[in-house]
Amino acid sequence: MKLAKRLSRLGTETAFEVLVKAKALEAQGKEIVHLEIGEPDFPTPQSVVAAGTHALHQGHTHYCASAGMPELREAVAREVRASRGIPVNADWVVVTPGAKPIMFYLILALVEEGDEVLYPNPGFPIYESMINFAGGKPVPLPLLERFEFRFDVNELRQRVSDRTKLIIINSPQNPTGGLLTKSDLEAVAEIAVERDIMVLSDEIYARIIYDGTHHSISSLPGMIERTVILDGFSKTYAMTGWRLGYGIMRPDLQAHIAKLVTNSVSCTAPFTQLAGIEALASAESDVSQMVAEFRQRRDYVSQALDSIPGMRCLCPPGAFYVFPNIRSFGMASSAFSDYLLNSAGVAVLSGSSFGEYGEGHIRISYANSMANLTKAVERIGEAVRRLGR
Image 1 (tube, one colour):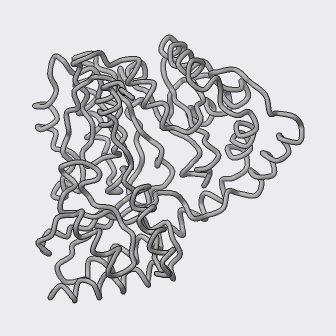
Image 2 (image 1 turned 60 degrees about the vertical axis):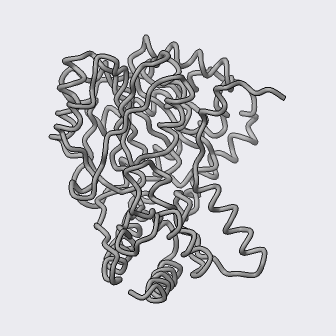
Image 3 (image 1 turned 60 degrees about the horizontal axis):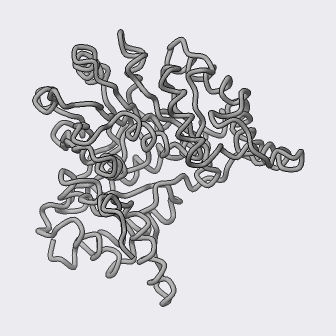
């Protein structure tokens, strides 16, 4: 079989590859602490489950509008108006099966062969994968530890060119937990307005913040029409398996993205959309409790890892990841993560899985119980001591 060349340009998410390795070890009888998968370990709020179940029993099991059910689009617009302070209505909303399709559809809609796209590095690996798949040229924007995993504004300006078609930002960020400041966003906005560049603002972790404040670039002057907000229900409401996300964008662009939905998946399951309406209406206390628990885990994990000789770990302001520095051990990130899996029974991700600037780090998801996190940290410390530290 002769496959299309474009398939060779697709990347993947290493988290799922590591999960397979970890499951294989478990099948052999080895106990593994899973810190590789980036999803909340909390159950979906019961009110949301009840709404989804009720929708199924009521017969909401058929096609609906490709852009999403009007009721959910209006509910999302209302939430975005309140949280971002921007004047959007339902015509700005397109609902998708998970938030990931928004980045896929937007890059397909905007990027021509050879166009450049700036994206955060280390960053969510699907950014680079989709840019390559569409025939664009990925231009990494380094997020370095010495800048608290934010970008250098001068570096940003140097990497923008006349070929830049799109800038991708993510705050709070995967894999580092970093948070962009308002001044960071103002620097991006200045360039975007001056050069008339679109911005994809991945705000999927916007509600999971412990220190500082989330700012959306869409609220800055001249940016509402140049910004596509990517958000969804997976992280905030512990609904990863429900596959429910959305994009916020100017209506003329929204019409084209909705057409891509029609051509690919037809629509998003209506019963999940009705569950999403319930999440927006009633799950606030569940979200607050989850974030409070994540804060306790973050404090413990970041301090405990930072106290391990040879390891350095910043305390991240958002998301549910830490990105400790492991350079002193003289091992590549991939080798170190394999070492922890095989010798310590702790599944983590190599920093290089998130791009070249992630080398020298590992990503740990603290979306797990305090008991398991304590066990994992103890095992990591023991594994490091065996290296002679």
